[in-house]
Length: 302
Length: 302
Image (tube, rainbow over all chains, first blue to last red):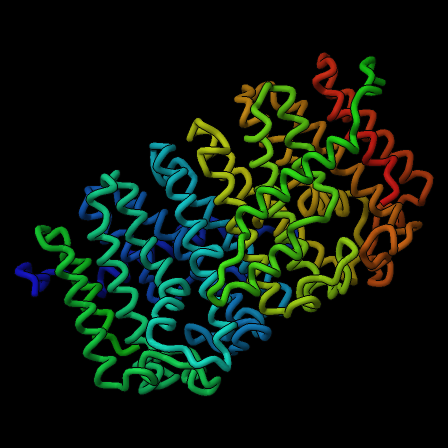
């Protein structure tokens, strides 16, 4: 599909490097406060440090390579996005939501600590995201910082992730079709993945008429990731995933796999990856990491 | 204490006008989405519209009068702060936190809807705060907008309200002294009240060396409000308050009243109000609304 090669990209090495950078930023933000907040700090470190694929920060840093953005700045924006992702996982796992005991191979926050601490830890990660993002170390231009904040708030709020979660709650017992599932997933998980690329586009001051292709890339990768998640959920093993699987099937919720079947779902995900890579045409090796991420979306085993 | 008079200030009228402005901004943000998010929108309107004293937006608009800030802009910043306050109330009322059935005279969100929707409604108010704040309609200068965002994130996160909540959880079964209670309340409720004034100071581009007095005003008013809350909690009636009272006493938690007794607590609150007003010396009638708010802190009956 693409003429460019990414044989030279060490995806896992890059992912590990970015994950360490995110851990470092979270460590700095979550140094223990010895005054009654130690349990909250410990809960936030439990949830936020040393786990997860760090897909979103990786995408931000990878997209930043297209526009010559300083990597530390991109990493800070990526860490802000990961902070939103971590908060959403903590709240999703609560007994009143998905009621999960296991996350990233560890007990969920409300299991390792307690429910009240889990609610607060999620809330404080939510605030931390905006504190990281609006800081001048993330970008020297305050116009850019304000844009980053507004767009992240939209991607995480009622017209993004939060709204998608609400649709997901409302979907229980409903028979959703492919369009409805696609729309739900675009809000619930797609909006934040799109924002991970959009953040670099904003930081790179890409003109509005040049932004559509990057949005297309991110949308396709986000959807491919979700379909691959459904496939892994259908076939995968919980040990490798580090979380409970087949919850949607048990709850009678439609997934891409239940609607399309395994083979068509797999083909659809591959087509989305090919399209994502096609959106990067004209870019040379500076886009190789983004291409590798797109391929990884469907080739991973967890 | 103060030479200025505020006989001309119609505090209740101003408060009503600001409350209507906040309701209007929330109405615009929470127009129904007819696609599975209607329950979330309804829960957010239930929690956010048509209730509460709107103390924080009132303080922002009142402080904005000192610096000639456009009232609509101040109102938007105030609504952002109120969005943080509303999210914190929704989450505080959850069964795993304070487990309250009544708030502002209505059933709490998890009672009127369900727990999962309450968690999401709080999360979406949290995001809405930053969306309102970082918008160019709140301030034309992006430096100011970025500052507003960073300071709000600090005031609501682990070093502000969220951290204070964690201290409050940790305080159960502990014997806190007056210093510890004061510190806890400064984070839990004080930080956001301080920010309500700080937002106007930031928007007014007050030089750093001129900011201390406004911070002093806000800190004193915040603490006076909390002591008055403890007094109302001790003596008041639940019907007027619109929420359950004497929870701290039942949980064996220290309050300003349990530590100081009624008379000394009342005297302390009055002294804080006098000091708050003293911080406004040199200002003329443009500070009358702030003076009236300070007096109201201890004169209110709910």
